[in-house]
Image (spheres, rainbow, N blue to C red):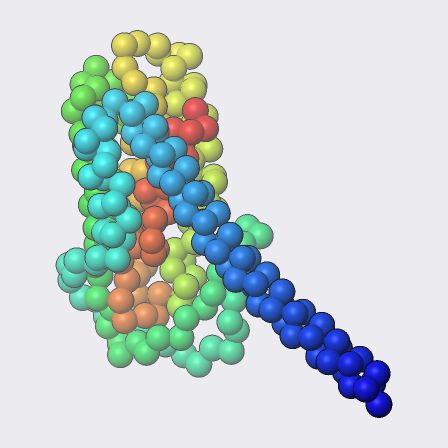
Length: 248
């Protein structure tokens, strides 16, 4: 009997140690995940800062733009209200577009939609684009051509999906901005910043082609609220311009 009790104690001790190791492993994994996420976030912010330096934007101004875009993506400024289609009963939960799955929301639509403009996804990128255009006055024609091309392509592929939003393939606007910028640099080289042309055309082309040219169709979204340039934190419009700079 003493031998059995000792064996039981050993088995209980092993079980307790296993639980301790398991708990320690979970804690270590959680701490490692948080640390890894923090490091990746720092690299991400540093990369965006480098992109702004390539654009010719002072470092102090970049430090204002980056957190402003992050926090500003949560701010929607109301503009006006339009009549909209009532929201029907929908059974689907997701919709596929260009291989990407988008979640369908089921908001109550009282027959009208409030149109707003997003601070981080529209106002700040427009302001940055205006600053870059002013800083490169000799490239007005290049800016106009690049913006027009990206706008036409984005407007052609943009799709309005009720209860989801205006869908565009994530990388395509940035790729179009890069290709048209490279073509302009080859055809009409000059003393202007090619990175600025890529950013401005990617940003304004996406905003105009996807959102502004579809304002007349906002009623078909069947939602109580719609925001120009608003798609959550680090809005796609903002990231399109940054991505275009990296790809150039």
